[in-house]
Amino acid sequence: MGNKNVKTVAIVIIVLLFGYYQKWVFFGLYELISHETSDSFMPMPIHKSVQFNDFDLEETSDERIFVKPSPSIPKRNEVSESLGGIKDTQMDSDALSEIVQSRLNTLQSFNCQSTRISCGSPTDCGLGCQVHYLMTCLMLSYSLNGTLIPDFSKWPYSTKWDDIFESINPTNCGPNNDTLTVVWGKNEITLKHASNKNFLRQFKLGLPITRSLGKQLKKSFSNPFLWWAGQFANFTLRPVLEAESWILKTKDFLQFSSGPIVGILIRRRDKKGEKKQQFHSIDKHFTTAKKYFDNIDHRGMNVTRKVYVATDDRSVIKLSQKRYRPPKWEIVAAQRKLDIEDIMKDIILLSDCDFVVCSFTSDICRLVLELMDSRSLNAASKVKSLN
Image (tube, rainbow, N blue to C red; front, side):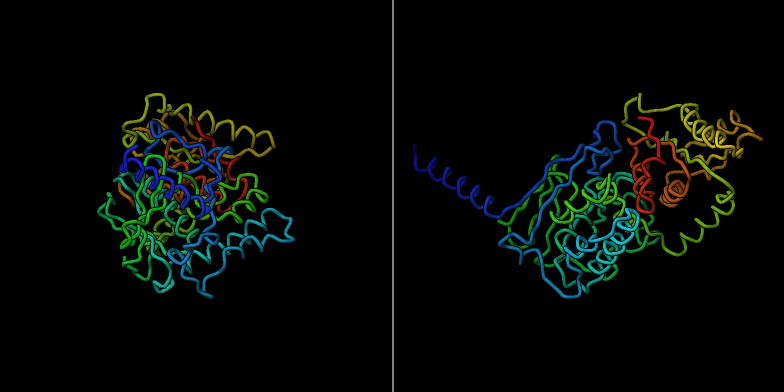
């Protein structure tokens, strides 16, 4: 064996040993929704068989690269400790949610003193896809005890994020020489150090979470992955006051509070690239809505079958109103285009419905489920996917 080959083998062995002693732990990959049928390839959980991508940086010898400890930032184990003695699952959820949201707020507004992590969508995909990338970025920075610096270089809308949603980076932290940048791969996430070119960390795609919290959530909730995603959907999708105002006006105009309402999401123009079998007819959506209202009727509650139709195709609204007429049915809609304001309004209004019919190949549909779960643990029973 030549000297060159010997050196190569030696380098490989050293790298492997270094990686072993760093003790990076992953519980495995979760089941992904195929990027062939989704808006985009995104690491967001839907099925009960998903798994956390679990690690604990407190065990690494180079923790100082990632974490700048501060007494002002809640410790990660406080979340796990808060579960002690609480038996009511919803109380569990509320207590945990308060701690997670508080820690997110602290990390994201901590005067740029914690580790900075630059991360964003690698593609100019739609709003639902953009939000899911940001959510994963936040999960990663949360688990690394760092502050996310959102990268909006691939943001496809003329309206800026901060014009419609609360700022994710209110202190306007910018990158520095110690910033970690997230690079998206097909099956992994790579962390690169701004000044140390030899520093690389790779994670298999999954939901980033510390080991102790991941184990505790699995014990506490029937679908811990959905709960975890819901917390970050709730933090990410916070409308600014002006946006919140016209959402409330729309709800009042459509009389959202006047009895049970079913939300139906029918996308047409923004489903380019998806397989034909992913398109579902109007009648298929309404058949599911009918079953929901039939169950209400069987309980002796005769109500008007009110349906909120969220769509980017005006003909869908007209056809729905033509086929499902008063007095038995009431079809309401807020016609949207592809503008971010209209899409955001659909997400919020759908998440406020009593029952939703959509398709999990849609990032919007998954966001609706995640938002609903952040408010109530039985959200999975309130959303029906047609695929």
